[in-house]
Amino acid sequence: MADKDTVTACLILIGNEILSGRTQDKNLNFLATGLNEIGIQMREARVIPDIREKIVATVNECRAEFDYVFTTGGIGPTHDDITSECIAEAFGVKMYRDQEIVDLLNSYMKNRGNSEMNEARMRMATFPEGAVLIKNEVSAAPGYMIENVFVMAGVPRIMQGMFQEAKAHLEGGKTVQARGLAVDLPEGTIAEPLALVQARFKEVDIGSYPQMREVGFRVSVVARGTDPDRLDQVISELMQILRDIGGNPEEEDLNTAQSTSHVDD
Amino acid sequence: MADKDTVTACLILIGNEILSGRTQDKNLNFLATGLNEIGIQMREARVIPDIREKIVATVNECRAEFDYVFTTGGIGPTHDDITSECIAEAFGVKMYRDQEIVDLLNSYMKNRGNSEMNEARMRMATFPEGAVLIKNEVSAAPGYMIENVFVMAGVPRIMQGMFQEAKAHLEGGKTVQARGLAVDLPEGTIAEPLALVQARFKEVDIGSYPQMREVGFRVSVVARGTDPDRLDQVISELMQILRDIGGNPEEEDLNTAQSTSHVDD
Image (cartoon, rainbow over all chains, first blue to last red; front, side):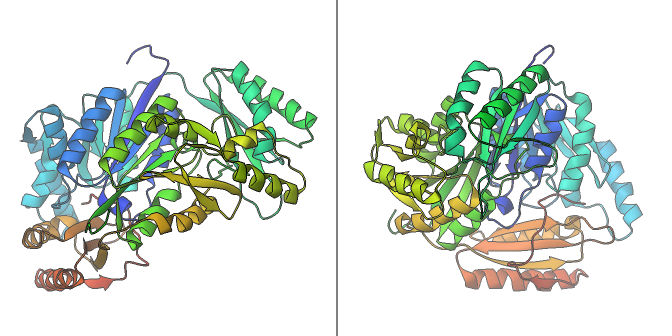
């Protein structure tokens, strides 16, 4: 991965509960932001059910296409936690039981008083051969990496801890930065000037995000790219053009602004 | 689609803004729930960027695999709204301009006073040949269906209106229902009994969802399937078994409970 400017990632969210509507996913947004901070661009995310063939095929397709793949979910002790078997199958390797993790889980269970090690929990000490374990400070049972695939828990707090540990193994490229503005004109009115600026700054990705309001219009325009000077140029040109066509644009702080997606008028 | 018990769907969320972490998606959860209510099971969701080849390939892959495909995002007037061109390419058809929609947008713009029809907005009146338009009561510019693919806006409020209109074209199978319980035992402790019950009720999908709490354990167990009597049986057997191993299970109202996903202990 060394010396690449653009490093890509795909996230695979494994779990029936997101597809059934029961659970609102929180991991995609966290990882999209966290990866970008270290120079890795999330280029795709997939939500798939706990079905063996589907998991194996998706992991194999994605690990060939992207620099890194992250999975969340399905590494607990219950019958519906089948991610590790699927990862082993995807890589064509066997599973092994890690005695150090057996001991770790044993002492973790003892400390909690009302739990004991059993066959179900042994599954959390069983990994595809070749896995490099990733510490779990929250609930002991580790995640792991195998080649370019990072296997993490689905519970957000546990996943977030694992991601912190995983960072030591990740090598990013240039960080994508963003500059934004908001303007009180409808999207259809600003579309043509936006397209003209986009055509001149091909290495910048200009996005237009309308917001539904009861009264009046508001569109957020976001310029993203790896060269901050070019981003500043794009935003300052756009500010001028939008003023010229009668708008009242304001620079927007992208750390606080969140809008809904595409499509207006 | 007639007389099928199991009808499947895939959702394709099109938009860089979700992958960059800027926007928290709200459409997946809404559609997962809304589709299930009419007997359609969301079996996969993909979040992909505004890249032509990616959109075309994903649409073609998914429309072959699932009964229905829904896309959200990318049908507005700006340069980053490229979904319709991609749909036309995926189906190998040309685009046409729909005069009725041109007139509709014209009068919509006139009523809003400060907008006028222009080339950018004309794009929202331009569709792949063979598209059956889906009314947009919120902001006029329609979505559409073409064969088994439904193309909708990304802004949640507009998408939700389009989905109501789209329902007339959708034929579901049996509705998946759910029953749940919550228990004060760790997941590793209940894993074996869960697996035994799952093995006996193969047509029921039993999921186990631990919740992180500062003090004590809590696991939600959800049984999903199309036969409500079997679901009741599963839950009552599980209640008994969990009581027998020292737990204090309670039936859970799935309309109000939301948990994070998989993995514990």
